[in-house]
Amino acid sequence: MNGLRRAWESVGPLEAIALIGVGLVLALVLAGALDGVALIILLVVSYFGYMAQGVVVQAQRFRPVEPPRTWAITMIGNLVLMALGIGAFGWYLAGGGTRAWIPLLIFIAGFVALRAWRRSVVANLYAWRTPALTLLQQGEYRKLVRELEDEATAGRGHPDKLAMVALAYIELNKWERADQLLARARQLAPEFASVNGALGSLRRHQARYAEAAEAIRQALRFEDNINSVYYLGLCQFLAGDHAAAEQTLRDIIDDPTLIRQGQVYGAYILGQVAEGRGDAADEWYARLAEGAPKVLPLLHEEARRHKQTPYGEALKDHVRSMEQIIARRPLARGNNPD
Figure 1: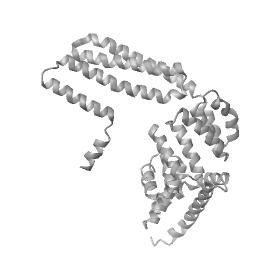
Figure 2: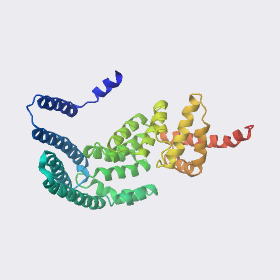
Figure 3: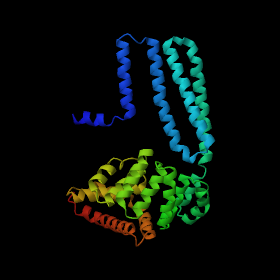
Figure 4: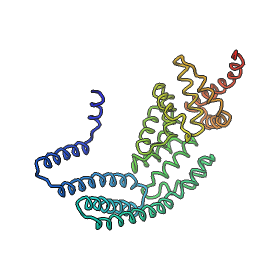
């Protein structure tokens, strides 16, 4: 009964209308008031309307980072090709025979051409991202700000670039400026994963962990990302919600695409949660010890960079705890009678 109630509550307005429409169509068919061809036309038009709504929503989501011409061509092209493909299929079902293959082949050729054009356009639109990420990973935060901030703030602003510059300001502990940039980015693209992910990073460094977790959840609604899930678990742990942190991190700790820091810090958190519950944590601490040599220096550096901040102090305490756990492990193995 509870499962049925949850399923019913998840039905949105569009789904409700669709269910009503299906019921009406079935009633007309059973009553003999609707022939086969009319039924096919109705189903094709209904399906196109449903799919078209998704195309428009997706185009609107990416509109803030694409030139008007690119955005319009993508949306209109997808709608026209979708109408062609769905219409060709409906025509074939209605008895169009081999003639229905002509629009279907045009649909396939157009779809391939549109995809190739999109790949080229997207490569040019995001050519800045790899150099910017490289500077961020190398710790060249001031250089990144110098090279990208003017582009990010030009005109109405570019939400992805604003988020990238904000990340650099976060690492420079200039949180007020980062907040200003992210407020502008959220006005342009409130759903973007990059914008909400950067906001989550800012709130985490400000020790506003519950807000950070909520921002990361917003980012994950836009784009699923294993490393974002790790940061969600970290923020939940720092906020004191250990049960939620454990559930979040257990789901991704074995994923091979998870960053090494997530594997090590996540294992530490899971070990701490297990110990707090009175359970054995040896498995998690073994994972911690395995990856610690490459990760602990990075965590030390991050704690030093954000020293005298609540987050930096929490990070420093955790690194010290990790080192103590690792230092005790050889003694623990030596006392094992096996």
